[in-house]
Length: 178
Image (cartoon, rainbow, N blue to C red):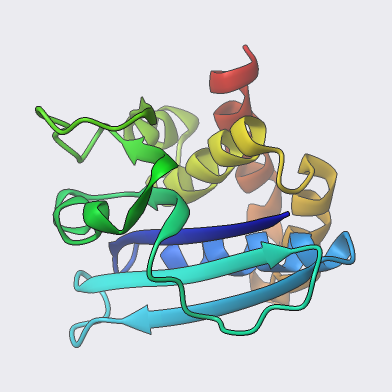
């Protein structure tokens, strides 16, 4: 099993954190993993994307020309990256900020991640709602591994945010499982 994931949005949406948590969760499960971040020139508000590759075997390159899954958090990222999704790939889309239009994708799940995060009380957890949806749909890693990764990488100053992030993750998973 090898899963190539492109995660894209704007700076400030937690794109890198989403990828990092996913990568650490895969390591918790003793899988091979790469995480390759890429920032736009503006950082906050500018383009941000990362590629995460998770595999049962060694990974030769952290780059992925085609993704098995894309997690897209805003419209400019959708326009920029949609052609890099493999023909049988999964598109996980933030419908709060992305107009899906007439684009045809074999497999797409779209939910208002930003609106759900606002309802939870913190717009910044939209990334974890999206991650929960991805994990529930693909089962590449387990929810428990995501929880462990969150606790492991959270800086001491952010330990208080773990609970809201876990709630957001479960809310996202519930969109698929509920």
